Image (cartoon, rainbow, N blue to C red):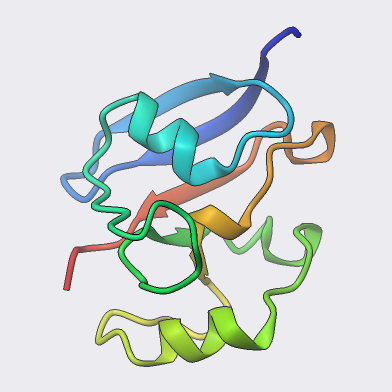
Length: 108
């Protein structure tokens, strides 16, 4: 399986990195594989909000919308930003998100 650029990830300290990933992976997995500061405690089970990212405004409407459980978890996070906050475990790498830009949210 070939990798595809997924765009840019901005870490909490402002460092911008370009990443590549295989389709089918979760964004959380890709961020962890590239040693970005993401706790991802539950490992993608949708039971914590420690893989929180902010999706760049240009990309928000291009992703599948979050499900209610994701919004409930994020809304409890003090760094929650309505419309921009997403759990990276819920974003799947697909060709349509080549160029995606996200920022790793501060760990609460």
